[in-house]
Length: 296
Image (spheres, rainbow, N blue to C red):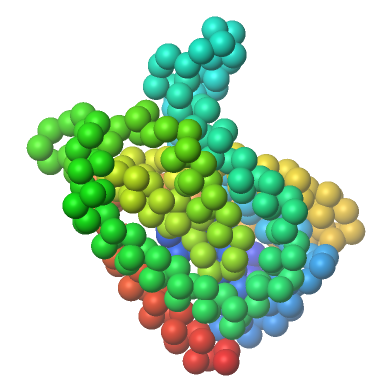
């Protein structure tokens, strides 16, 4: 793996992990388009240097999210321990802690049981192109459902505080635990290369009445422990023989991923205050369809 490849994939990971366009799908498709066959094969191999590299960039992305949301995570962690001590949930921070825990469980269990199978079977250019197209349809479909009368009525039930320029939507703290579980189950579909973790969790939040800003915020908070845990779980790949001869590239790629992720989340938090998922849906459909033609 060259340092140029490390920089390109690191930047790609940092951006596409947060933009709702699938980092896993792009980490398969871009090497395929560029003719980097060793990376393409490495993505779906049982063990490879590419997997060791991806461990590093995933951990870097999660750390960038932790830094950006550090104040919120401090309140959430304090709320979690306070709820344990009091044996009840009272404040929004305490509730948010348990919502995130419940939403994380489905993906954690599914990832442990099926991640290897999903990756070796589906992390290939043609499959990634198909699922990226499906991801685009999910994003556009979520926007249509968000406009339905019953969802708009749900959004009005406990509106977000703010001025008239703030998009109508429920407060995050009004989500119940079943709804958090629903969002967590939706996140499991991101195990398919081409289905965006942030995109599908945002759609799940939107159809439960959240506005785009809060759906994005919950999605980014939810992604942080999942990405970090997955990276730490796979750390032996990086420290073992698979990481030999690529640890310098891992360092460079991880730095690029961290910077790209931080800038991406900073942009997206502002973007979703007044914009929706439609441009990303159109992008995924176009790139997915062109890639299907290319790799079929």
